[in-house]
Image (cartoon, rainbow, N blue to C red; front, side, top):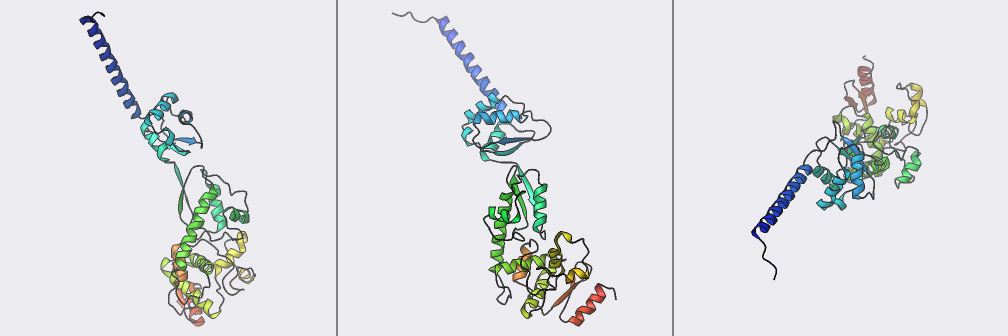
Length: 339
């Protein structure tokens, strides 16, 4: 028979178990404290890039390499214990001061990438759009070496002129995203806006297609000094299209001059024939001249009911509208020549 354990031996075992339990609780408490304690990041946010296919261990190493003063082995152990290690997503992230191992893992598991914002402004032409993209530091400039023609091929719109085809708005993107992805979103946004506007067109519109509406909207966008005048200006141009009058709008002439325009529109410019000179050619120009916003699109398809055929800037951002040439000439003398 085995001898019965002594009372002293039982006490030793119980004491050992108690110490082990205490140690486990202490380690567990320390682990919980560590998980919810901000990591040493510094005074500014750090950038973390995770390439597709990076392992959880590699992510932990990347965090340390990004400048976070943390033991990558300990961080990796936390990833594994959490059960979220396989849910972490590739991308570009920011690690701001105050980030804890817990909040970092949550961010990586949700794919909360750091975002940049690019604003495309109503009335910009495509040359200005490309210049804005070139100035963005956090974006991949995949379109930089592409011609306009090749760029539209990459966007699955071969043969389509890019002018006016992108909706002016603010677009957010993750650092490292392609500029083609931003352009694709803006392109599809304009598709939706144009389709919606064209479906609301007036029954007596002289416009033949949604593309015509886009062209007219771009002219309205450039001619509008005051939002309240948009529908009136669209009404003047619609009336001219109905009766076969030339549109005679300066912004189209300026667009046709391109980079040669020095800010001063001269009489010889109005007489120099280009496909966009609406003084020398009747009807709409062949392409839009800028990016119209939602309001300009709606004005183009729902112009004001007016008999006006002329308008002139009054110098305060508004326009004076006239039904006859005589009235228009008097308005020009008053507002433009101070007579």
